[in-house]
Amino acid sequence: MRLVMIENGTGHVAGVQLASGDVAPISVLLGEGAPATVADVIRQGPTLLDTLAKAVLEVKASALVPGKKVRFGAPLGERELVVCAGANYRSHIEEMGDEMPEKAAWFVKNSRSVVGPGTPIRLPAEFPDHVDYEGELCVVIGRPCHAVRAEDAWDYIAGYTLLNDVSARDAFPGLARASTPLEGRWAWTDMLLGKQFPTFGPIGPAVVTADEIPDPGSLRLTTKVNDVTVQDAPVSDLAVAIPELIEQFSRYFPFEPGDVISTGTPAGVGAGMRPPVYLRSGDVVTVAVDEIGELTNSVHSGE
Image (cartoon, rainbow, N blue to C red):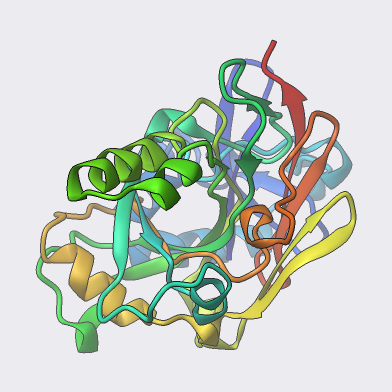
């Protein structure tokens, strides 16, 4: 099932996207008291998903929002916790000249940076010159999840979506120049702050439920800039696999339904090119996985 948030004129409402591209609003499928967001749907668990699946089979065509008129929002509809794995594709680790990790690096993506498909990425006025893309597959948590073992981790996944971990790379020269632990620590902090600007967290276009993707390792992720493919890698290239990510992160984070774990980005980021190539106003970035869809955002000046 494809769970989405769509604009309705006054805000966003949750819906189920059909194979045709049309969307059945959940309020139409379930009536009064229906969950307002995809995160609310996930919190109510598998029984509600079964009810939705049956209701979709009976919905009238006149109740659907035509696909051509749909405008998507960020699919969870709330500012949930977004924890990102850093340097977690073997190909990306190699392109950046790093060593393979024993465990995943991580950071929290500011939830106020989250936007949906079609919302412009705004280049920060103070830091416009080194803004980069990072296409990523995300796991959406489906149950309260804390101190979970890797062998049990699949039971906590509600579904999958996509993230563009947009990053201002202005701290990279400082990282390269750092000659003391203190300099390195401050440069690393600045690098993480460069990921937190407004609009730097596009997510979407849908949450595809886990039953439709039994083996996420078989997926292939691509990123295009202006229709040129810059990233193309199998999810099986993860250095730390999804169950181990959930085990490592849930040791500390008490995840709730609707929270997101982003699994890292493959080779092909702008900073890894020789010479580096960064985003400019007018560019269009598309992160895609066939089974999930395309997350497309244009790039605009922040002025």
